Image 1 (cartoon, rainbow, N blue to C red):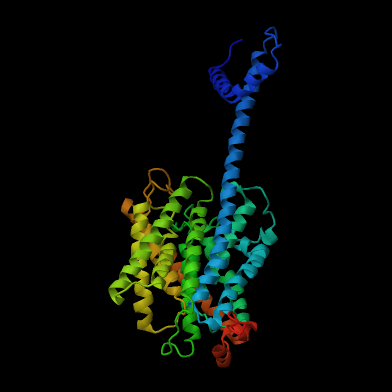
Image 2: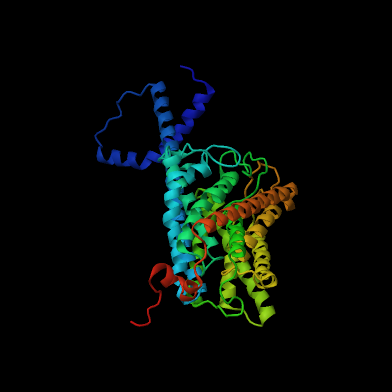
Length: 483
């Protein structure tokens, strides 16, 4: 019988594979059954080839299953890490920065997002962000998580279940509005905050997430009209939350006594612990955005750490020069600023570029928080705009400069990614993405503020503000010194 050259090669490969994978078991079988004789008739060649083809197919399937299991495991861990960024990370970071009479009120705002945004995500906002729709917003095909099962997420991450992708993206949707609360800390009604965040999730977050990451999105790097590089949420998370924070701070006005009355953090220790949890959790935020456990996750992990470290040094150095000494609060603020700045770039830049991005963003955010804020006199209580809005904007623009196809050939093999690599047009795409994020955040947030203010009111009474949000909004105290 004559066989084609293809079958001969396939048979040789299958025999080699079978021999390597089954040698130990054959040896065991021979030792256990020495009475086997060599007189058994040889198998038909066609049957042998079919069996070997099946063996190759089985090995391929086993390899794919192992990759799926590994990627899924990493993504579930990343989901938990990103949730840890909100609770307890951000809650502690923000909680330590306010006065002690407002710590529970501040931490409750972050905690509430975990509950409220989760329910909204399951009901409708996941669908608005990630189902097929227009270039600006998704559709309703996944409302009530319809069709979101354990099948592979082929449109977004072909080696993990769709539910894993859904819950991972949920953690981003939780922390984004929670970041805004830093701007209006110590002066907003808890009820007003809840209504504001529900509307913000619909009007600002869902459209922006769809435009950047959703199928057919206007800013999606795969097929979008203005492909904007945003690996883990520089525009989607930080620009939107930071700019919205500035709008809320300006609309609400200053806290009673600001800036004449000193309002120092009541516990930098709590903020220090929170910043540490944020740094660790950010590895899930950025490296998890590779949507798998491969080499791209490694690049994002390294870039994240390098960016945070360089920014902490940059902020501390600037503070040292200006004030004569570096502060613990400055160091942790710089680290968070660096984490913000490297977020859009993490999966696109080399480690050395990550150092430059971190250094630039750290110094820039220090300038925004210390100089620009004082110059204009707005009361961004916990510097949500100075760190997230400014850091996210600068990080997004620097991504367009430093992005490198060696790390992530997102536009195809051999095609330049960033300006330094020979694609200056990408900087224009980044500017477009940032401009859209700013515009959507300003307009959307202002509309929501007016609606909430005219209906249930935004700000607590002067009496409640003096008493503190812990007692006036929740009827309890964070520190009961009487017992």
